[in-house]
Length: 285
Ligand code: C2E
Ligand code: MG
Ligand code: MG
Ligand code: MG
Image (spheres, protein in one colour):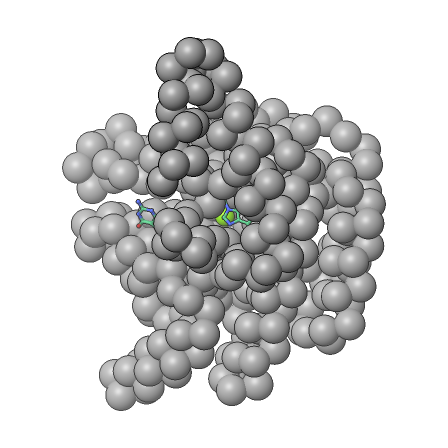
């Protein structure tokens, strides 16, 4: 408490900018020790087939179990972690935990599932990080296509032969590549096509008004047609309503993810949730 008061007084004299940079430094130090103390975990958010409602996989989303502030979402710490060069540290934990989940769950179900994880440009540019990732994925002996790497549209547009080479190496150990948050970045479609990605994840903002706004629906339909030309699967992100889902059905969008289907859940809970969901589908069949 005294520390907090002291910090505020300090900020009063030195201005908000200074306060901000001090707080960023403190947060970066805290993140560094949180990595050592294993305070990061993953939540898994299920992905579904639009047509059947069956689960097709899950995306791993990092969370920080902060000792005093509770469960923190990535926007609370990833930007600072990125600035401090700590993304690969966090990424290593995410990779390990995601593979561990896949390893635990896959033998208990008789359908293939995709486990997706988000990688930043900092991680892809980190030679040691990629080496370890390749080694881990290769060693896990999963079916090809089990692991999907998500990079944002903007990461995909980062002009770098090195990044492309790393993506190619990841492909060689059987991972799929997804372009995340598609539709809000600045895509060069020619370059995008050259990346040979497997999946386009349509950003939530593009889909918010489908079913209510004709222009939004037309835009979505156009992107789906484009994805088809590029021979890519499509995951619609951030689906919250039945109305949105029915539009996805109408245009034969293959997959969706969103609160309507399920919220992200602690990885430990995913297996139980999944088995219950599968029993539910069996009863319906
Ligand atoms: P993303 O990869 O686009 O992940 C989807 C985000 O949308 C998640 O937020 C998820 O909780 C949220 N979401 C899912 N369904 C809905 C919905 O129906 N409505 C709304 N309003 N939101 C929904 P989250 O977990 O806060 O993650 C935010 C972003 O942080 C992610 O966006 C991703 O870019 C980044 N991120 C998360 N985990 C990692 C990681 O391990 N490494 C890296 N580099 N980035 C990560
Ligand atoms: Mg993602
Ligand atoms: Mg996204
Ligand atoms: Mg996002």
